[in-house]
Image (cartoon, rainbow, N blue to C red; front, side, top):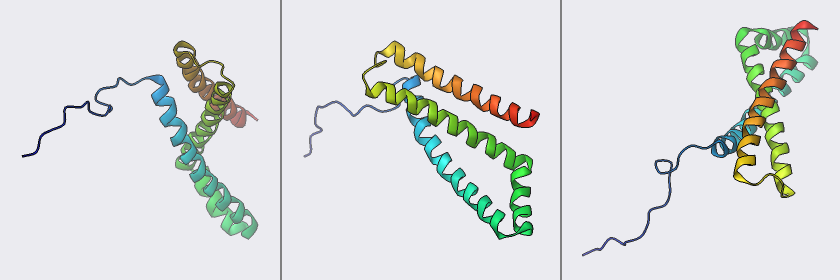
Length: 128
């Protein structure tokens, strides 16, 4: 006969409430993946630019399409978010801002500043 051990279960997402620190941690990893994929497209675009006008026109046509623009917008948000959250982590590395309230506020700030920077760059790009 097997007896079930009387010990606590490992914590999981059904026990924990979502917190901004959980979201920013997952988003930081996801933005790193998005940046890697976007960097592959950037390399393809640069190789196409060196391969001749026809090749560049086809790759640049995709980049200029609404779907390509959407992907580049999301990629730029991932870039700014990864930057802002990375700065947040660097500040944490020196021991500043580790209390719960500051960590919560800086999480929201990283998302907000990333969104503001993304909008600023895209508005500036279309105006200039």
